Every structure is written in C-alpha cells, then in structure tokens.
Picture 1 (cartoon, rainbow, N blue to C red):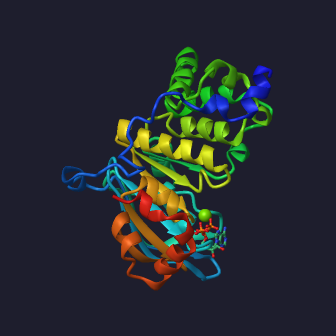
Picture 2: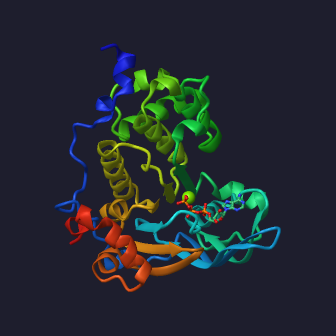
Length: 302
Ligand SMILES: Nc1ncnc2c1ncn2[C@@H]1O[C@H](COP(=O)(O)OP(=O)(O)OP(=O)(O)O)[C@@H](O)[C@H]1O
Ligand SMILES: [Mg+2]
C-alpha cells in the first residue's frame, strides 16, 4: 500500500498508546468538588435568539461550563443546540440575533461586545469543531500549510515555529507519520484524520473551551471512539472545558459528567449524566433513552 493510500484508511490515525485516562469500563472521568467550585469559563444565561422577522428560535436557554468540565448537549434536530453554541462563539448566522440574555466568557459579558470584542475571544479562549471537517479546509492546499497559517494568525507564531508547532500538535493528537499527513490535501485524508487536523487548528491558541458540535457524527464507530478518547485525554491534559453536542446519548455518556437535554429551543432537563440517564425526569429524555435502549447505555455509567 502506498503512503498516500495508507492515509485514506484509519489505521495510521490509531495511536498505539493507550488512552491517558480511562475510568474503568468507559466511565467519564470524575469531576471533583474542587473543580465544581471553580467559576464558569463560558456561559450563556437566559439566552433568547430570534430571526429578524420576529420568530423566536431559542427561548431562554442557560448553559455554563467550568474549566476541565465536560458538558454534553443532546436533543433532536432543530432543538437549538448549534445556535446556542454559535452564540457562545459570537457567530450567529446572518439574520439571527441574541435578543435577550447574556453571553459571558472568562467572566466578561460579551453580549454587546461587537466583533472586535469577539475577535479577542473566538479561537483564543473558545474554539469549535463541527461536522464535515472537509468543508472547513481548502481542497487546493496541503493541510499542513493551513494548520501553519492558523498557528501564525491565531497564536502569532513565526513561520518556522508554526511549522514545528503544527508537527507537535498532530503528534499530540495521536497521528503517526505526521510529516506525511501535513503534506496531504483534503482529498487524500480520511474523515477521522481531517477532524484531527481541525481539532489541532481549534487548539492552536490553547483555548480554555472546546465546542465539538456533532464532530464525530459522520464517522464510523471505531473512528468515533478514537476521537472521543482523544477529546477525553485533551480535556484532562489541558484542563479544557468541553462542550460536546450530539444527538446521540451514548456519545455524551462516554465523555461528559453533566448533560443538558434540549427540545424546541429550551433545556427540558439538566443534571449529572448518570442521574439523567438512570432516572430521567422529563418524558422527552425518557423517549430519547428508550430509543437507545438496545445499546445498553448502562455500561457507560459508574
Ligand atoms: N440561519 C438560520 N435562519 C433561520 N432559522 C435557523 C437558522 N439556523 C437555524 N435555524 C433554526 O433554528 C432552530 C434551531 O436550529 P439549530 O441549528 O440550533 O438546531 P440543532 O439542535 O443544532 O439541530 P441539528 O441536530 O439538526 O444540528 C431550527 O428550527 C432551525 O431551523
Ligand atoms: Mg446542530
């Protein structure tokens, strides 16, 4: 198999090292009381998002995440998960606005900060990866050049250091034969590999918060499991606050100690993942759970 052909499979992405932390049988890592006492690093409060024609899409949602914490956001399609995340990044789609509530990062209220205020925060303190990594990359350029460009712009590194840092980052993300990967274009890399490149870009400026919005959804289960392991490890090693958005409760159960269930632009249930999955209080959460019954979510719980 040629080097390039090898890269299109997932084998090269697999790190032979065991995941840094595994709380037994896939348990989410514990989040101790000292961690719970830390103030939120990113927060939306009573967030209302509406379109300019007046229709309200998100109706008073509150979400917060502390350093080192992994929060899961689940809910059906159209329930407001992505819009809430976009509000946390200060990038709502055109025509939509935050009409009330607040968005705070590092204790600073950014609700009315405007683009200059957001530019200091976005990418630097809070970064995100989404579904379909290929669409965020230029197909005509090697991915390495794009990662280096991000490192130069976001982290302000000179060219030579950016190159060195790109290698280090990919190595840290469990990619072997890093130099070969960096020379490839999008078409020659697998979805899992591209998502790792996007995660490396998101981590360029060492942010405090990483939002992963359906970032593993389109990948096959093995690759998805590898990326979830990677997110868990990054979170622990970097004290990264993680917001993991998924329609899949099993994904959230593997990574997050806390979960919020969205429905129709509202949070209908929130709490410790183990409590919500074991004793759901809202009929909609029970519905979501029953759809997962066949997968045996119990095995992810402490
Ligand atoms: N640019 C937009 N203009 C108008 N309405 C929008 C826009 N983007 C999203 N919406 C609407 O806002 C609501 C919430 O959308 P959002 O993308 O946050 O849902 P979601 O929970 O992320 O869904 P999915 O699981 O499909 O990603 C939906 O009704 C959607 O149709
Ligand atoms: Mg979405």
